[in-house]
Image (cartoon, rainbow, N blue to C red):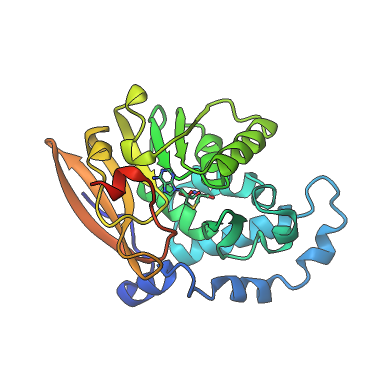
Length: 261
Ligand code: SAH
């Protein structure tokens, strides 16, 4: 399948650099570009972070060469600051991962946008997210409005909090489940795309089974808390082909499913 992933002419080095989850200094660069934005935004009572959000994603879209205008619109709409603890709200539009409690993180916004673009969703498509976490990526997928969004989270506190925020924001095309995402969500399978936001040592076989023909599975594979590879798998004639998308660091994929695999 033709890759849409062209960051720039000398892409290989820069791509790995960009996708490096913690090492990326993009948020630093953006913060420097946006020094005055907080002052300007204080005038806007409804959403004090609107300008910061737009600047972040305009910059990230150019830098990461994002193509899909629907994804950019969704990114500029979803209030990321509502998905992070209130003490982190001022950092919500820096391009970096942030703690969300229970030892977990909300992913770096530009990486989330890329993962959604790499999943090549089209109107009418059904997507499964494994690792709801804060619910931010779930909200982006719902805001995209292409089809129903299913998401599984293993930590009860995060599941409850994500459910509450997504309800408050009025996303009705989302179904959340508390459970081990190793087993996917067979009741609603097959999925056109499955996006896993925790790093496993191998691909959970139930996720492959639940992927539709032509479907795309994005999953970070590698050791705990060290550099991992983000893989894009495509199911063709029942078999998976794979493409290395770049280096990332995600929190570990946990649970009995993967442990007993
Ligand atoms: N997409 C999230 C990122 C959350 S971090 C966001 O935008 O905030 C990854 C999440 O995966 C964590 O919340 C973690 O609890 C969850 N996770 C880890 N292993 C899991 C499993 N086996 N099943 C479901 N969720 C899992």
